[in-house]
Length: 286
Image (tube, rainbow, N blue to C red; front, side, top):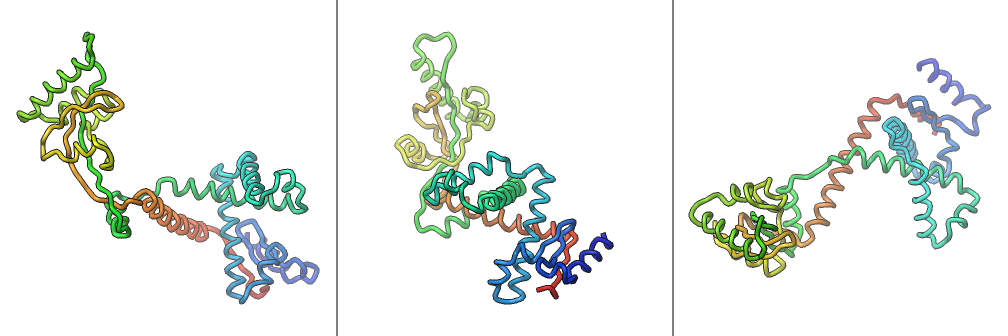
């Protein structure tokens, strides 16, 4: 590698190559002045030029990694992006393909999509704890909504009964009576509920109080069993477990927080790529 770098240094100052001088080396790739000329000419300072070169270095490292991880843009990915570009510019794909520099555009699109695929792959497991989201998002919003968490026992069918609705309601009333005397609601849910939530004792995710059934469940006192109500999966009884007030824009706020965290995570990851790479910038050539 040292011999290669030494050779590149010689080439970078050879008058024969003056029109396309090498200004940086990244692992086994080189960056020439001509490849960045439009950007470098408009640069306001030498530091600005170095920033432009560093961005190109980051792109090269990400593209190398995308290739190694099998995250390069597929032909379908590129074609879909080109269709989107043509739509955004109110022209047909055929008109875009007739553009004199279409091949350069297609290559640039392929690189950008590859980097996007890599970003999504590297940040796919980035999450934020629910309590952190609630705390931040609730502070940022003046409009808040009420949510509750409940446990339900849902019955959709009782064996060997002709009148299913009557049989189900009789069975739920029997369970409700036992729970009222101290039996475990969650235990009965795990034993009798015919909904997949039985695995978790019938406990649901947070539900917005936005319809009469949820409002009825919200009005329940501690350990009080609800009246029988109809769900999409059958008849049910429930108890109220918790309540909270959250931002009305909770989803948008959550998405924003995850995006910002993923952006920072990915930036640090790219910095680690740089630390593991061979990088040489020829400042004197700028």
